[in-house]
Length: 346
Image 1 (tube, helix red, strand yellow):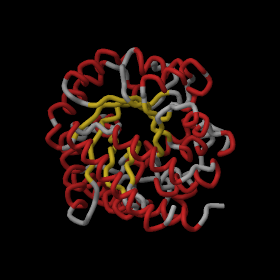
Image 2: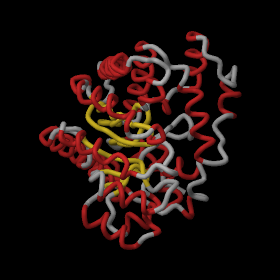
Image 3: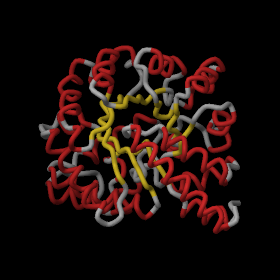
């Protein structure tokens, strides 16, 4: 069990979330509202029926549900609503900075204007900031299953919309049959334009996917990366190069990439010196939050306040913020951690 003091620390500690999908954070009631408002049918008419959809046999079943519900989001004002609600939720959990992914092809393929999508999200996060919402950077997470050629206009829009808060470029989606190497030229262009680069890798496919992401795409962060544990040389390399794994434990368990908490490799990776962060991924679809992920990590994997402070500092240093802003974030977090620990005696 988690002690009351550690429970309080987890709830109140400053947090940085680096692996969070906007479309995966939509409250069930909001999905229902958007379905009715935009005339997009979904296979549920109540929150209870919607909750029943959030149980999956594998990653592909999750992806099908994700895509069906994301289709209800159509207009810039919809994205503003999503971002505003997410900003308030993050503020309530003491998240001081977040990098939030938007899956562009889910929307572009339906004829949406990506600039309108980004402007809406930026407006929502800005509105939430007026109510203590965190600073948010937007990352475009391209679905690798759509191929590299179709990604170029998406990347061009990402680069052109940096003034709207776009800070990063990523590939996600179905790893099987879509190795990182296909996207090398895109990542070079993104880096040269000043965007931070990351990739989902090593979640469903094994270490080869991670090797490709770090050696060919030259990413500074890996989304998930848990299958790295299968290759001792890769684990050593990640630690030596300081490549950060943004780990989402409940997501891995719910998509059955991992059998359960006892077999999750987060503790092994951390003890091997791999920089890791804890994240919620798609909190609605996996019925969790970043606060709950820290609590579960304490309960099932025996992580401590020392560990959580170290992971949060790792997250702050791994952001795609400019160096000065990054340094200020680290300092703010260290001061808040110190004050809270002194108050709680932990």
